[in-house]
Length: 146
Figure 1 (cartoon, rainbow, N blue to C red):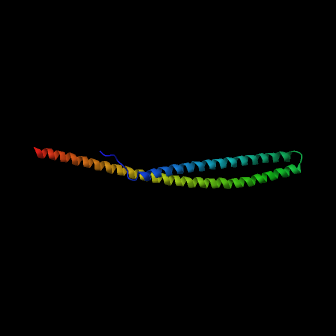
Figure 2: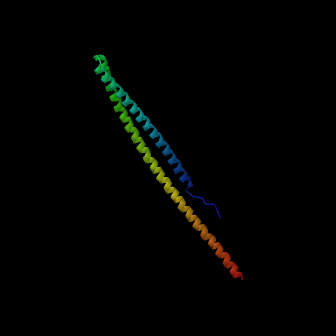
Figure 3: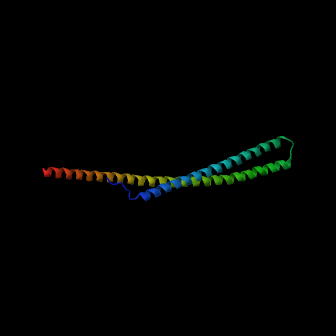
């Protein structure tokens, strides 16, 4: 019995590589999103520290310069948090885009694998029919000789 060769195997191999690349891109985008979210958490924590310092400054002896500096620091942190929220949003969009590409690549690969399976089934059926034909010819040849 001859070996089965799928005539579009090179396309299937390319689809597998594209899927792997899409998975890698997705994992990199996900890692970037996590990093951006950690930065955002750090900024929010620092803002909380400044607010705590502001409460302490109000409860102690009034130091206008320290209070003004603290308020300025809180305002800067608010600006940094806003900018970081934009970065997190952009990173999330990138993750969504990569996830969509990964899903499309997976669907294409699965489609080609199904085509390969159907081609294999067809090949096996043709081989079975060929084998049956050969057996029938041998049987009729043997029967015809008697």
